[in-house]
Length: 251
Image 1 (cartoon, rainbow, N blue to C red):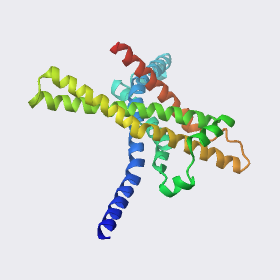
Image 2: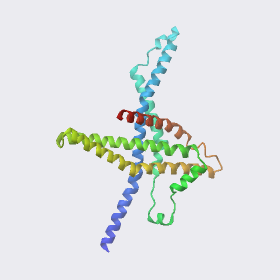
Image 3: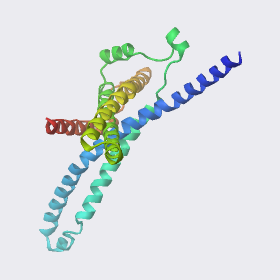
Image 4: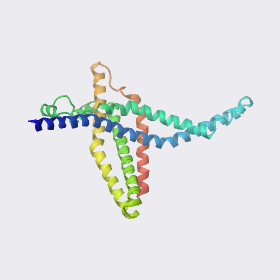
C-alpha cells in the first residue's frame, strides 16, 4: 500500500511537471523560430531604411534651407533603426501568435475515456473546412514554419556544441563531424516529433476558439486575429525562402 501511494505521488509529480513543461516548451520552440525569421528580415529592413534615408537626403538637399540636415542619419543610426523595427516586429508576433502556446493542455485518462473537454484534429479541421477564416488558415501554417525553424535552430546548436566538444578531446575532426551531424538530425526529429505538431494543434485550437467566440456573439469571424496574421505571415514567408536558399546551397 505504501509503495502504491509513493508511485501515485511520483506519477502525479511527473504529470504536474509535464503539464508545466509542455506549454513552456511549445512557447520556446515557436519563439525561437520567430527570432530566426526576424534575423532574416533584419537585413531587408536595413536595406529599406537605407533607401528611405537616401530618398530623404535627396529631398532635403534640393532646398537650401534643409540642406544642412543631409546625412544627419548615419550608418549607425540606420542600423539601430532597422534592428529596433525587427525587434518590435518580433515582439509583436510573440505576443499575438506565440503567447497562446502557453494555453496548451493535454487530456488526462478520464477525459480521453469519455471524450470530454478537448477538441480533436477531426473536429477542428471540420470547422476549418466549413468556415475557412483567415485566422484558422494562417495561424497553423505560420506556426508550423516557426516550429520548424525553431527545431532547426536547436539541431544546429546541438551539432555545433557536440562537434566542438568531440573534436577537442574525444575524436578526430572527421569522426566528430559525422557524430555531431547525426545527433543534430536526431535532435531535429525528436523536437519536431514531440513539440512541433503540438504547437500546430494549439495554434489551430486557439484560432478555432477565437473564431467560435466571435460567432457566438453573432459577429463575423473573418476579422478575428487579423493583426497577428498580417504580422506573422511575412516573417513565415521570409523564413521559408531562407530555408529554400540553404537547401539550394547544400545541394
